[in-house]
Image (cartoon, rainbow, N blue to C red; front, side):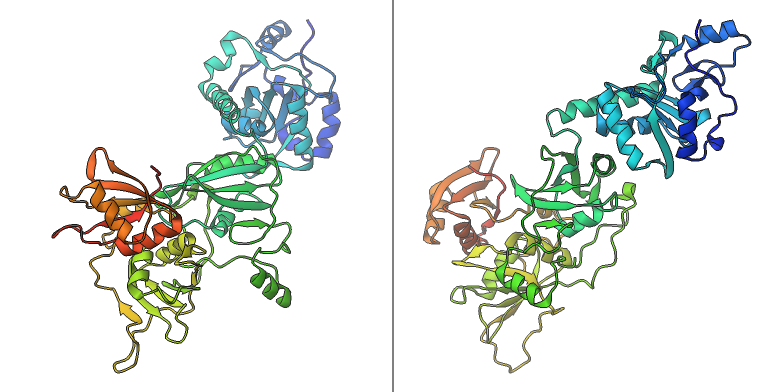
Length: 527
């Protein structure tokens, strides 16, 4: 019987120092180590056979049909693997390139075999790792075609007898089935941030995802009231590694959970470099803001993004990836709000609006520039929430701008100093929404929307009374609905987001009865 492979007892991993030296031995048969101790089964090496006849019988247990050395094969030979590497890690090397149908790890020989569903997938994988060295647990491993066109085991030594190999293959198949309804493994990931209690910016995502590999482009957007992003890597292997490493991780403690899947897009077309999108391969793109573009052009500077302030992921956040964000500037709790309608704005109005996203401590409308105001929040992360949700929102007919102020606090006027009631202190206000640590209100923070959530409605007040109250406040009511299981709460839909902002400012804390004041917030739902 012809042996399915040749033996070379002198060919050990330590003697195969470089890929160039290996190539010479590949011509003689790259898989010769498979037979050094007789037959091999998944996950273990059989005892050496005492004679040729027994060798031939044991060889049947792993049926490796030979073909021309070096020729393409759907079986891939991986060398120099660390001793502790698992079947799952070997399988993960192949997942980005196609369906993995079998795996065999020879831990004592620092080698593994991976069988793909077809030669095209295997060829793509070998070609990729010819130009880019594969790594497992920090060690460079070498990927080449096997001399054998199939990786077969008999029933006794099948993957059914090797739970770890079986689990790895089942996980790979589940991933393939999952990506059938997504875009399939490629360079672009779709990232959804769930339970976003604290704001997540493009820069936060960049620092997190660039820990895994080079990030080329990012586009962020909000869909169905959920913050999402598309992130492009230079190759499928890096994208795969990011998905495996970061999917399900929390950016901050117990919140801002990353849900990652493959996008159906294979390339991102980024037109602007700003706080919503970024092409890191082309720093000279315009920002989309004519004033800022002019300033950058004068200064000859590309847009590099705003520094993060105040909120940083916890030390444990994304620990699986070893992610640590660099030190941030000192926390700042003061916002500069500009382009306000000075005929409409009051400290109380800003307290109510910004109070949706944090506990406002002080408000100052600038005496000599009354379309500008300073709003001091109680926590730095609340300033980020306010910026992410209120910047560029149309309020009282004007698109307001919300940015971090250079001031660390809002100063109260000195005694006798004219102020005309433009500065107010709210530090002891009973209307703060988040004064209780871990308040559930953090879980119900949403961007401005045309639908408002109403709560604290007394049983004596009916739908018509509430609709009339909003109509008197200047809102056009389009729909109204009490919560079926809790009549203390309701949804009211108004004509526009701008109307809803104005209505929230007027109607939050509106007195519905002697002992009940209405509570109003933005809703993620519609009627």
